[in-house]
Length: 558
Image (tube, rainbow, N blue to C red; front, side):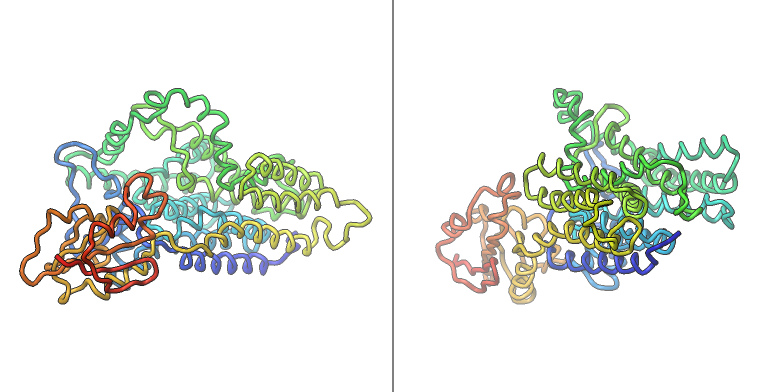
């Protein structure tokens, strides 16, 4: 029986949506890597009609990002509506992130509001979910497709479902959309095969699977035919991935990094998950896995089996991430990077939501105390800033667990009460929000918007004719600031190319200095080897034209 009401999930959805949008705008750093610049450029090419599907003529390493049509395709549509700017460029990842919360609310907001609210908070306030909203990376977009695929599989196979064939078609279409976004939708393939085999053995959901497999095969044939026509290689995308792995084989775990293989396959992934903030999800999902019986009396009959569905999907995806390989020809486990975990996050968060529901509505106190002890252990092991989050949650759960059954413990905060649910969600939201709020208050490390203002104010046609000297990072993406149409009389050169540049009559020279870029630790470790003062010393004859924040524009006397 539902004891909390659907308003609980709706309020959680509104909070997560508002917080996500606030994070998107307050922490936006503009273009921050080659990936989002390439996707943006492909989107503009698609819009302008200059995009070409063509193989690498030399058979060397080719950009695999060009094959992810549903990353930059929607961005091209946004460019047509809103113009080329950094907000229209990154709006698609933001919408996909918000879409995950909406799907969770749609699945369980009315029937299991505690599950929905808990899952939305755990996923939506996870720092790396938020961190990936304002970059044009495929990961949060893939996360949306993954959740949508799993939801279609679950919903289309419910007992008594009307028109299962339409659900099968939707399931196949969503997986195809995921494939056009990023190849790692393959994480879900073992689970799909397992469910299909189980249904075949039990002789159920035949109509769903017949349409799903048939339409999926048809889409795949069309897709392979597309590559056969344009590249003379139906398996071009697979071969492209293999060539990429071959190019990077020196760093894989059987050649260049063999000594780390045992650690990578045993304790290292678990330590990684804890270190990026996933301990609450893992612990609560473990609670859901240990809960007795497939369905309890307090569960809605139609959602009872859902817990096992999300646990099985989370478990199989976790196993694939832990033990799988990025290559068919060589064993190379998936890189332990936070953005690589996005297919795992939706099922893990929903499984954790069921664990949270058990602790709050059915628990005796032991489960809550166990959750608290494990989180406190994680906090002690990390002993870093994330320990504050784990420690706050751990102390709360330990207090809830140890307080149950004691005389001093308020009756309003016993399992099954709305007050305990509301308080727990508030503590969960407040603790998880600590890290994102910290970054929302930090100053920009790129000064993108200041740099954009200076460029648009002084380095545009027709006044700007000549050369602009810039750092080694901006030289790779300066055309984005001009909507990929740089004024024909304007040239950009690196700082150190000053001695090789000659000005024609009537041309001028500028020095664009972004102090944020030149002091960014991530860039100065690998790309930038000079300081702002050293750059200024190379151009002694200069006049300050404008300074906005940490961005300075000088006119250089030649």
